[in-house]
Image (cartoon, rainbow, N blue to C red; front, top):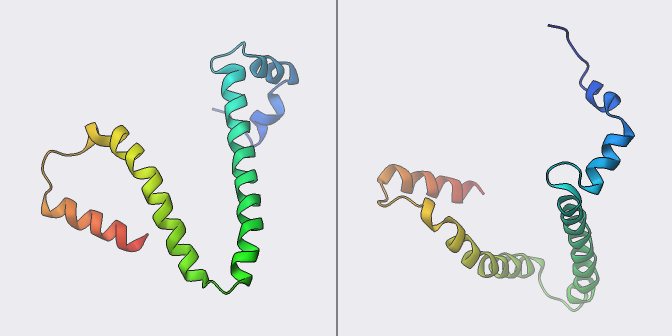
Length: 110
């Protein structure tokens, strides 16, 4: 068995294979790449809008802790229905004391 450098795989990949992958010749293809890039752009645009809106809100005297709590609650309200719909089948049928303790420790530690 020969040892390879960590970046050796990057050096061996040819540009043609990257182009072929981007155009959809392999599984996933163009649509997957497009969705990943679109998601990254959406996160950046959302962060920019948040910063533009945050500056006048903080200048008006709103406490930063209130904004953090409000943002967490809004995220919870938005994500909770999706989490229930997607994860409902994976939930255990009974809650044991051990499971409740694990959930409590995870919740407290963030």
